[in-house]
Image (cartoon, rainbow, N blue to C red; front, side, top):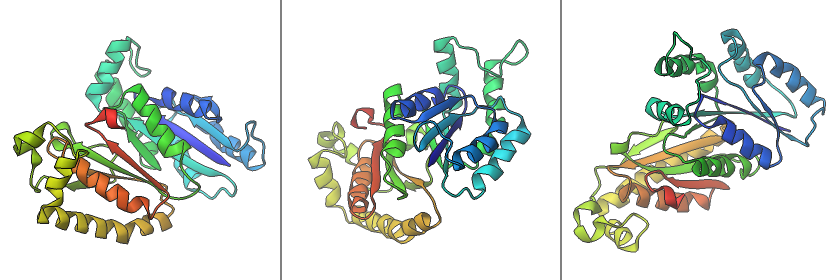
Length: 287
């Protein structure tokens, strides 16, 4: 059976993720005390689960630090018949502050002595034991609610069997490096279509930009180097029981070169792995 544990900082989208999994047929438990999880796992191993073989639970920082540490031993232990995954959601501090300000909700760790910004920082430190053992981290900073639900569905719900889930993500360095990237490639050194007025308004999905980059020897050389590295090492990630990997390709604005390279790499590796997804972070409508 499959047990998904969702955690992360308040305001990052935990409730939305749990709701999506419930819509997809998971038996969901919200705010379960960590101390109860070992008994739950024992119960599930005996076949005592109420909704088939899919269970999801959400835990937050309102647990003792010792309980959160115990969770590390639980997840890293052997549980025949139970596949445990830990999904950690996060967002940058400015986005979290904005979300709480817009909704006028109180942060669970804030009070008369602790303001919102301090509560957000405290929560990050408290949740470090979970963040460190997460099998998948999702940065929701630049995601709408719809985008987040799509990300959860494509990476968790639609994941095929035990095959590694690979996401190629384009981004722009001027908008910051993705927090959830496992591997980051900087391709700003490549010829930039932005400087051609006819190509500037287009993206790496448009044929004129593709033709421009296809004709550059540096682009081919960079592609071959990245492809060669991934072709050699992705099977090793998979053999080490790695369930997810996010490969981020960055250019300056995240519109031309990184989009082109992500599409080219994803097309190649989609013929070699079952679970390959694409996300263009600076082009949300293309998700």
